[in-house]
Image (cartoon, rainbow, N blue to C red; front, top):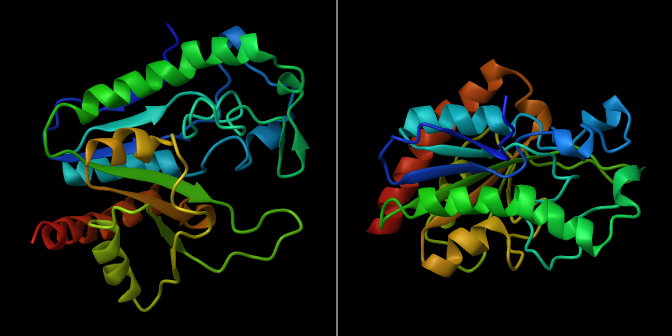
Length: 245
């Protein structure tokens, strides 16, 4: 099979929603030898991809009749949710693990990976986003319950945003009303990095957007992923209605 740096599900779906999953895969492309020198158990950790996020994204796309684009390379290869000049674009150390294949990667290798993986992914995402004037971006991510040496994270879900809160504010309000959820605003990370996917494809085009972070132990199985998609879809639809009022 020919390698491609992204997968698109439901390209013919025509709702305003566009679901993205920047950290969908822990795959190392064949031209990198299918390995970064890390042990398999490290490549199965959150450092390599967002565990469970791709399943939630695909299920949400089906429920919302939305196209879904997922990366097809590990964020340790090169991070598609970082701008090209971001210092964390190509990580050499992540949550206690050294990435051997990245330790001596120079500017030429970074440029090669940008051209081979990062830019094709963003070109495909840009094409999907441009299919309608009223595209609404929903970016699906997951986070680990606890980083090494850090306190446990108390949230079940985080909603990340920059200055455009048209969609995120009503979504947070709806989630806060759920008695079984601990909801974080711009948790466990800040909601805006210049040049990240939402900045590039949402904010700079005036498109409504939100980024959803789910704790990865809550979405480990296909059943849990579908359950979260079924739960989030009506909240997103209602949030969009409130945002458009």
